[in-house]
Every structure is written in structure tokens, then in C-alpha cells.
Length: 417
Ligand SMILES: NC(=O)C1=CN([C@@H]2O[C@H](COP(=O)(O)OP(=O)(O)OC[C@H]3O[C@@H](n4cnc5c(N)ncnc54)[C@H](O)[C@@H]3O)[C@@H](O)[C@H]2O)C=CC1
Ligand SMILES: O=C(CO)COP(=O)(O)O
Image (cartoon, rainbow, N blue to C red; front, side, top):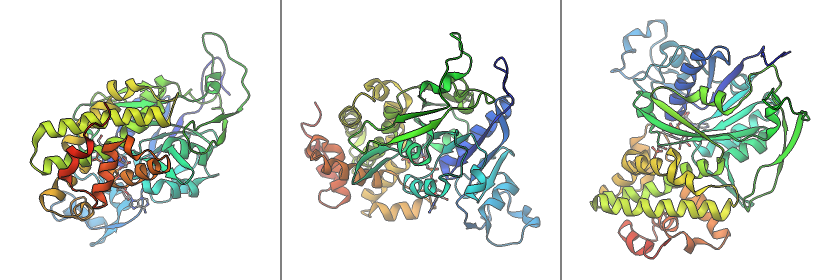
């Protein structure tokens, strides 16, 4: 029981995913659970999609495998032994309170905060397998960059996670190339967290509002399905998940967090810039230089804003795209050194399909821009609005082989004025 605002429970945090960004975010969170021991339990569970991995000979752990048999090992074993994700985030020490766990059900058990951080194509199955097995009043944050398109319409991943699991889910996105963040080079991010007011039942300056422990919200205002989710309020025994406490989970001296309420803007900025980054890589691969890339970025930002305002009306703020890290800053960093940009550039220089470059270069990491370009196009086709988004449509058509990267100027001519 909590009396006079004193809480007796701490939040348990699980990161669902352990790729390049998943591991970097687990590192940040584990540093912060140590820094804020009255709010969070120290250990952070990190769910790992299990695979066998051989330690490379040049790994500093190669000669320290004595306790393990030689040859390929389970990735979870290597992470827990050496406190490093040698496959997806090599060379970066993870705090010892990051606990790699290959059992998804076990990793999410009793967690009140779930951080979803894995390539978007896998999240549907993950949600199906933990539905009904999580704390009913858990809260989520999606770090996934993508959009969830089906024949019924479009949803943000924060929405589809929330609806599937019956929890509130916010979003984190920013100009955050994972390797740079993991090496503690300075960056900013944007966290959007806007649960219904029921979570404010903790004492406030105006007293404790009397709220029912169960409330219902409708999460989607897009043309997609209008579904409702029943939410349970966070019990008073737990520290409230206010902006202040959510920020404590992510903010580091090298990773500055700005908290906002625009979940749609934050999610769409992260998802759509991956499509634009492919076009930026292609024009760079043609040797066209920085002006061409800047033109693609300008049109890309305008199409992002238009997409948000057209399909997520009343939800999205244009300023999120122009003022926050998840908007213009992520566009710049992704079109400078992101994986989508780099693989697209190589595909032009070497005249290879981008999928082949991805396979060769990324050691199991996944490009999100290619599948997002298909998802966005499928949705625009459904709306009969391909012509309204010439850059997004051009990227799709180039991936389909219907146009060449050199056609981009003509394809985006007279686009979003
Ligand atoms: N890497 C980066 O610099 C950043 C990535 N992001 C976003 O974060 C999200 C996660 O990306 P990363 O962590 O970089 O992933 P990644 O690109 O490193 O992907 C590899 C991950 O996918 C997992 N995986 C492979 N097959 C799977 C399956 N069948 N089921 C479940 N998992 C499977 C692997 O185990 C591994 O953990 C993406 O939406 C990405 O756009 C956001 C900011 C920066
Ligand atoms: O989202 C990112 C940086 O913010 C990373 O982009 P890539 O997936 O293209 O590397």
C-alpha cells in the first residue's frame, strides 16, 4: 500500500529485442536503473532471439572462452558471460545488470515497463506470443521505426502494440545511430508519452482524482480500424509514470531526452525518414553530391508532415517534424550515415539489388526503409493517393525496377510545394 505518496514497489523493465539499437537502449536503461534505485529494479531483462554465434578470433574475449566450450555458442550465453552483444553491438561493454534471456515469456514476466525494440517485421508475432502473459497495467514504449499497414488501414506500432496487448504504449525516436549512442557520443532523442489521465490518480497538487481503475480509450484516429483498448491504471504502490519518471529511464549525459505528447509525430518521423534515406543514398551513389541529397531531404520532410496531417489528423503536430530530434535531425543523420543510406548508395555504385547489399554488409541487421516503402505504398494505393506523395512513390517504384535512381528529379518535380 502507498500512503501519502510513498511508493513501495519499483518498476521492473524489460527490453524486447537485442539487435543493434535494442542492445544500445538496454545499455542506457541499465545505466539508469542503477542511477534511480528508488524508481526502478536494478536488473534489466533483455529478450534475445536466440541464435548460435562463434566468437570472432579478433574478439578480445576469444581467449577467455575457457569456461565455455569452443565453437559456436548461444548468443545469450555469450552476452551474459562477456557483457557484450558480440554480434549486434560488438566492442561495447554492456552493464552487468543487462540480463540476456531467450525466453520471451520469462523475460516479460512481472515487468511493468516494456520497451519494444526490434525490426518491425517481427513485432506482430512477438505481441501474439505474450498477449495475456504480461502485467495487465504494464506500460510500453516502442522504439520501432516503421508503420503497421494491413488491408484494414494503417497504425503506428505504438498503437498496434497497445491494442494487441491491452496496454498504453508511447514511442521513442530520434537522430540516434545506435553505434554512436552506444559509444556515448552526444545525441538527442524524443520520447512521446501521453497516457490517458487515469495514470494521474497519484496525489496531485489538486488532490487525488477519483478514477475508475479501468478506463477505455480509442487509440486510432487514422483511416485504419477504430479499435478500443481497456486500460488498467497503474497501482498507487508504483512510482507514477509521469514524464519526469519516464525521462529518468532514458536520459543520460550523452543522450538527451525531450519529452513530448505527440506519439504519432514521433513515430512517423522515425518510420518515414527510412524511405527518404534510400533516395538520399541513391542520389549520393550517383555522385550527385550534397545539394541533391538536401533536395531529397527537403521534399522528404514535407511529405512526412503531409502524411501525418492527412492520415493522422488531429493527432500530429507539424512542429514535431521540424523542431524535434525525431524529425529533421533524424532525417539529417539517417541521410548522412544510416544503414538505409549506406546500403542504397552501395547498391547504385555496385549496380546490385539493395537486398544483396543488406545481406552482405549488415551481419544480420535489418534495413527498415525497403519494407516501409512497400508498406507506405500499399497504404497510399488503398487511398488512391500515390501521386500526392511523389518521393515516397518514387522510392517504391525504383525498388520495383519501374524507374531508376537517376529519374528522381523528374519524379519529384512539382512535388509538395
Ligand atoms: N540500428 C540503429 O542505428 C537504429 C535502429 N532503430 C530502429 O530500431 C528497431 C530495431 O532495430 P535494431 O535493434 O537495429 O535491429 P537490427 O537491425 O540489429 O536487427 C537484428 C535483430 O533482429 C533480430 N531477429 C532476427 N530474426 C528475428 C525473428 N525471426 N524474430 C525476432 N527477432 C529477430 C535479431 O535477433 C537481432 O536482434 C528498428 O525499427 C530500427 O529502425 C532506431 C534507431 C537507430
Ligand atoms: O534510425 C536510425 C538513426 O536515427 C538508423 O537508421 P538506419 O536504420 O538507416 O541505420
